[in-house]
Image 1 (cartoon, one colour):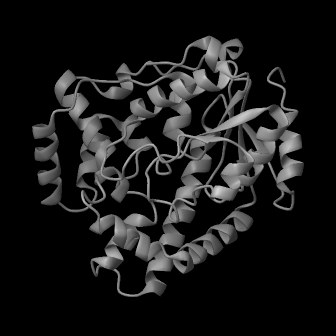
Image 2 (cartoon, helix red, strand yellow):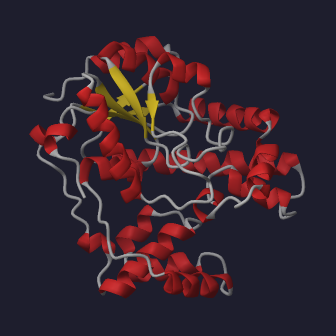
Image 3 (cartoon, one colour):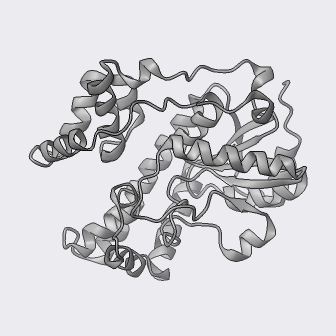
Length: 316
């Protein structure tokens, strides 16, 4: 599946690592270019996962219309194809009201699917998935990712070793079709004239970003991340496989299930994993040909940066 060119050309995209200031900047930018924001965060789609995803607050959402937030329950699976289908409907609605769709977020897979389309693949084979998950549970950590690396190195390089759901899906596609998904996906770079009006990513000084990440994690713990995660585990049905893998939540689940002993250790683990994740995000965006890197010093106000982004010229 791929966005129709006539719709894609009218979209804007603003990406960046976690904690790089996308939310505040995107709100200011949306007001400058008459846009509505389409979230590009794979975990903000889940209801009840608010603190750990740093979801835009009600006050922030009142200053610019936001879409693709709270569209699924945390026990549900939600694929990249699901995201593309729903966000296309959202874009059609936004454009129909004379507004501009502004994609904002840090999920590289979502950004690439918007820009290049996504391979839907064969229907799920739940028995095969169960077998793969059971086999992985009996092996050492990283075994499942290693299997994918042997069969589809390109797809394996795009996935974190803990992203069990997507790794299983990639192995499932190989088993059912005989070919790696990376060879079947129609994810080619579109000609410049068919791309969105602007595709930008915020690149900030590493120490500035890491300090913001550390402080954000401190804030999340103070605001009740542990209690929020406990509610997700206790609800019926409980948090599902996709949502359990979310950064911040998977470590907190380990804490609640006594695999991490103290809140101090929990905080350090989330901070470390988030910094590593932010580094991978930067690599991902830097390697997307369509993305223009926007370097910031870290002392700009959201309004100042938004004015700079609003002047983006696709032709340069």
